[in-house]
Length: 139
Image (cartoon, rainbow, N blue to C red):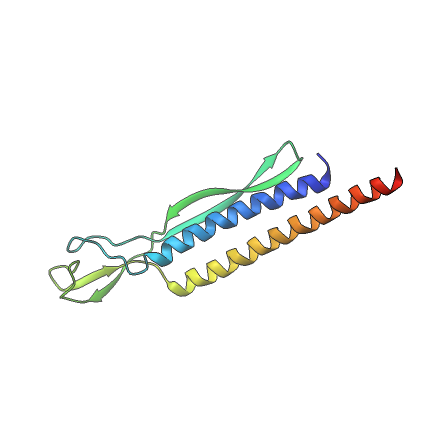
């Protein structure tokens, strides 16, 4: 496979990975205040995503893929709210272990990674187009 097509495939894998990362971050943000429906029950647990480099023999290089989506094991915070439906017998509600600032930083980083991969695709397509134009002008 030629280097320009290979760069397209690598960048496309990066786009897919960052897209999945944005989905996980979005789910975390959407559930940042989701508590249990039963008293004393566990609320939403934050998800994390990790990536791995996989060898793609067709291009002779590595592409990025989602390694795993896991649950964050950090402790839940307790909030005193005796009137809440999920409050335990002492009046405390377990709140999700989602930190909105961290999620926003992750979202921004995923967005920048997505944009960088998109720029690689645009450049590769432009170079392919220029190569085709050069070949046409020589014939």
